[in-house]
Length: 238
Image (cartoon, rainbow, N blue to C red):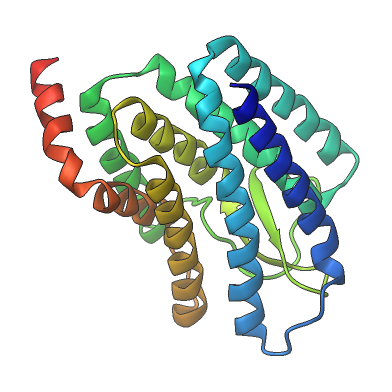
């Protein structure tokens, strides 16, 4: 457990340095390339942090403490107008909340049904004209907004894109289920990051909002496909 906390701290420090320094990195002249590259790097740090939070769920009191501490720091950072620099703390807070939520709903049937359900809701929310908190357009966002995790562009002081609160929370949920039901934690975390990269590439290519949760759910199932029959059997027996 101590090693897990140390890993979260180490990744957190690296992520915080990146999010602070990203506005000072060299500008990539092609706008679309800049969006994809900057978003992908920021998302890599974000999902690494989310993945690092989940093992703390082995000690529920520590998980609650991490989630609560993350929320307090997030509030302080946003009041202080940290902008994108608040993203690492937001990732820890929302992933911790997601893990707490999943611990309270531990059931093999939910490990199968919940990703499908939230993916469907996100598709309807995006393409039927409802509000969606997935990936935002490039452009100035309201600083201090805690409802999205901003990925900073390089050298422009603008966001390359955003990961919504629901995406971060359910990434924590999915990875908690993966850990508790013998699936592949590292491969799933990597798959969730790939899903975010695919989403921003499609966003840039198609010039429209792309829901991230369906892609995250697809990654969750695909990287664990050979282990799903055992999870289905556990759900039938439960």
